[in-house]
Every structure is written in structure tokens, then in C-alpha cells.
Image (cartoon, rainbow, N blue to C red):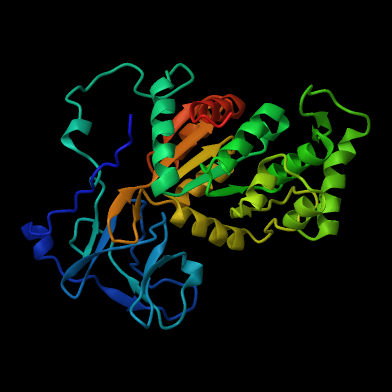
Length: 365
């Protein structure tokens, strides 16, 4: 079954409330990195500002940021720390147009999406939920996105400990279903360890048996990558064709590795500055039209906070930004909703099974 994107419905700007709404108010930044009092804080939904009598859809929305107008008239969404003297910041604490700001959450909702039922079983997704149709929908979506979109994968290191899961993810990259990857030091380290020494944290990735002095393996790999100067150089110098990072390097796909305080090494590409990591993550998230997060609660929540529920195409058309969260525990995937992040499709399963099922259904294995 071919996947079809839902049509986006703009707000009815002829409605008296919106037609008579004032232009958005702006206040100048007087201290770099400090927003004027009364600033408008962004959501993940489509947001419109009334500028010179016209409603303008804001691009690049991320949750809990501010909207600034640069001296050249460009409108951008940024964290407060990025505000500069000379910027103007949109004001307003209402979202119904009263302050010239309108938040529109129903752009992709059709009448068919609204059920008249007020009671149903299994309305909360859990380990008891059947995810068969979710897998089918995601496969249909990924086939569409390979030709028309941009798919970003956000991953923890859990499934790099298994040879079959690593191979499945590698094949997804090689088949064109991966346009970018985000993760941490451990993801890349243990994947490269698997390619270089056939272990992950000293355990054989095929048998799961610990090898003698295997606790040195990931440290040796980090050291050798640092000796080479980069992951790219390490892959080339050692003629590595196995694994996720090798597939990303050879396919010239971008990846962002965000560091943490507990990192070993780290690998040269790992970004130790949290705010630089956030900015690099935002760049990939902004370009993505579908995001799949697997087995990493903190990276998943961070991605959810940085992701809009919509994407503005180059031709100005608007489409949804799809978001999937996959984890073995209900707590991890439900945390997204607790944080107020965008509505994600959540699947409670282990990452190994998930990635193999998806790769198999897509014909990559």
C-alpha cells in the first residue's frame, strides 16, 4: 500500500478573530542572551505571527525557545542564550491570535481522525499493545521518505552488542533509509569495536561470551581512532566495511555524537560542549521529516524537545514531521508525553527485534 501524506489545512484567516488580530509585538534585546520580559515561548506546533497585516508561518520551531527578528528582517527561532543586541523578540503569552501570535495544532487533523467514541480499551500504549500495524505504517512511510523525505535515526548503544542488529542497521543505511544518525560516544565506540575486534564491551557480538582482557577492547578502539585522527580516517585506514559507522562514512551521511560526563576517551568526533551538541542536533532535526529514536531515553527526550510537529518544504508546502520512539520499557517512551513533547508513535520492544523487523520488511536483509 502506497503511503500518502496527509494534507495540511491552514487556519481560517478570514475568521473575524484572526482577521482583526493585531500585528505581533516586538521588544529589543537590551542584554545579550536575555529575552525581554513578556517574551513568547514556542511550542512544537505550527505557529503564525502577524507581521505587517499578514499571518506568517514560523519555520524551525522548537519547544521552549523564543522568536527573534534579526536587524535584516529574518525571523528565527532560537534559545535565549543566542539572543544578540539589536535583535527583536516576539512578545505575547496568548496563543489564539490576541497578541498577534497563533498556535495551530489541528493542521493535519481530518474528520476521519476524530472518533465519536469516548471509551476504548488499550488507549494507552504498553507492552500489551499490538504493534503490527505500526510496523506496516512505518515501513510504508520509510519507502515514501527514501524518495521524498529525510529520515533521522537517534540511537543508544544497546543493539550494537548484537551482530545481527548491527548488520540490520548497516543495511538500512546502505539501502537508503538513513539520512542521518544521532547518538553518543558509546554508540560509535561499540559499533567500531564490533567491526575492529568483533566484540562490544569485551563480549563477542556473535556469542555474547566475554573474551580474555576484553575490558580493554573499547579503550583500545577509542585510542586507535584518536591515533587515526577521526572516525572517517580510522574506517579508511583499516578498510572497515562492517557496521553502522562504516556505512555512514562510506555513504557520506552526517552524524552527531553528543558527549556526556561519563564518556571514555572520547572519540574525536564526539562533541563535549552540551550547547554545541544541541545546536548540531537541531540542524539535523530541522532537516528531518521522519525521526526514529531507539533505546536512548535522554537523547529521545532531547530530540523531542528540539523537533517541530511539521516541516516546511522548499516549495513552501507544509507536511508532518513523523516521530517514533522505541524502547524496551514503557517508562522511557511515555516520558516523552510527560515532558509535553510532540505526539510520538511509541513502540515498546527491544531495539534488536525492532530494527531487524523493519530491515526485513523493507527487503534490506
